[in-house]
Length: 377
Image 1: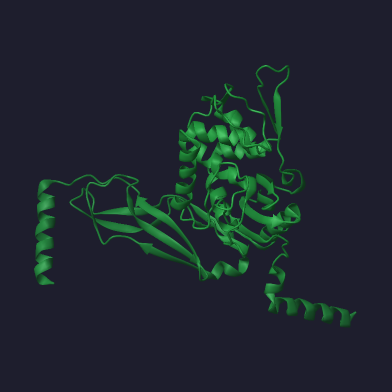
Image 2 (image 1 turned 60 degrees about the vertical axis):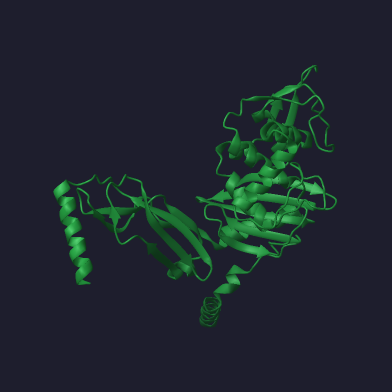
């Protein structure tokens, strides 16, 4: 018994010397893959994540993002153009003259992966399909993404239509900030009208991850013979949402589940900054009060390993002084958080209270003091 206990102690000790073994990277079949934490975009795992590849219907995440960004009224009805040409393959058999709400078309776009819905949305939201595609390309540049170029709103193959696992993850992170997007991708089925028919159209969610992975809450599948099987998946556990992207995978659900499980087993949500936390006080010139608190405009949490807790660094950037008047919530500076060597997250620091102009005499006295200090320096 003594020998057994001693062996167990030795084994535990050996594992403590090699903590990296606990965090072994998953073996991923996909040609390209990435795993990020949704709130901050922190990369937790990647495999050739910047390789430019065809992405099939995962394109429609950007189509939905542009629609939600530009159209606040999803009950707005749009008409299928008289000269409408169906792109083919997956669709809901839209015909010229039909009228549908943008909301219904979004469900068709993201659940059925309807190419005809994508084309109608593009024409309605962009004014023309070409102008909508320009909006898509403009958006990825605005997000600082460099691996993506779109030539259509649906993802049918074209040599000049491509993205990367990294870009798709960041685009999805942006799309998930919209409540309507989150609602649609979690929906099991949706019914759309079908004028001239005895029954309605029914679109079903094609993302099997929702039924097979604990905590799954999105996002979008895609397939063409050139792109292979693609999946953008997301899941939330214990307040932490992860986004996984696999491109050209022979087992997209297995790959995605491996990535997400790896993330949840090895990382946990850690609050780095709480909203309203005071990061300093800035002197105020010509104000009724002599200083203003600099507080965090929002909270910040991200995925971290326990071994990283002592690697967190913060850099506070605030001006030497500001001039009244100051409005509560006015931007004053930033706090930048660094974990290890390459992870940066920034939070704005804003005025914690308003500061009104002081009296004329007080302002004059401060001016005199400033002049004296200048000449004495």
